Length: 483
Image 1 (cartoon, rainbow, N blue to C red):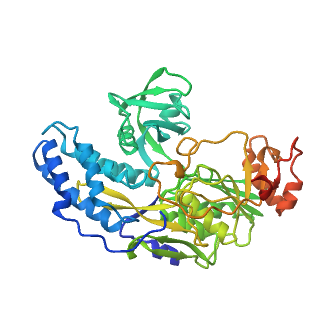
Image 2: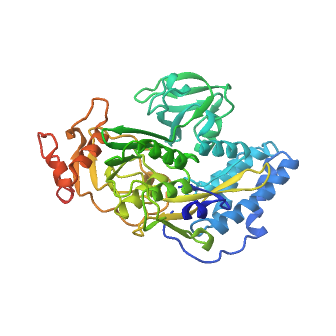
């Protein structure tokens, strides 16, 4: 077991991704007086009973954890006020204690950042299933846009894809539940469930006011985190997400690819990779490093400040490497790209990444009480820079004719409500190239991958630019000339 693996084994809480300059200092103690408006509103709104008593006390537990561990200083009275406002519309003694609690807590947490939230017992199971890469659901990547659920991309071979759902579709209703006003976490909660159970979506297609009725049946969705192939003598590793099985799959792929010969170059393709587990990202970066810092976490409390150094062992040491990213490459993918770029191990190519540089800890609140997913730190690359809001900048920017949608529907982390602040812009690219000018080794290879292979074969930026197909206008200029 490597030093990195030992350091990441059996953590106190599961580290996920989704941080920035923080301030230190002990917060004022949480008092009954602070909580009185919330507990009073909650008791008035919900049906009395054991669940009401349990969740009334759980408000204190959640707010204490937020006050103690959140990445930035927290205004507890403001959180209480937001939660009370979410409860006010509920008629006296009519609300389900669990539903009212979940709605109030998530309304308060949503004022902190886009990634902190409360997970009830079912949502906690769904979160755990997603980490393992297998869950009951419909098979599509979604985000919120103007209060509705927007389809970012359906997964091939899933119920969503077979039903004809398309990127840009807006989901306005799940069965009898309108989406407007629903948090994204609640929407995902309703879409996931036991395989074999039905759900009916009302969908508004882009460019039309008509709504479609789309009946679906949930299935077991299995994500394939890693695929590999040899493109000539170049090893291409397509890393889709950082589930709990990624590093094992990476070791296996490298072993299989090098069984007969050592590749002359490597492409680590993380386009569209929305992130995942911190530990898997650190071990992935360390696979290709033998020295230097991988990442550091900087939170408000000492327990949320850590750093990791590369282990001496390195796979495919000295083999030239390109990391492909785009606007949908986020969080864990950005950590890996920054670590390899800033340690001089790889050339980053593509478009600037999404800019999600914060980390969440998932803390169980007890049996049948759910969990708190809370932003606890920002991560910083070896240079000390955080990617929060600004993203990882490519060394070679690939210009596309069409802008690919990001995880937020052609938006970035900086455009999301309550996104934490960032600091420094990345360095400008050394060169910008229209990716359509790269020669395709085969018709079925996409232009971005063709550019990566072309650069690795050329061996240097100037040589690579000289090999590009002619363009009707000046498409490849030094970065400073095209600002």
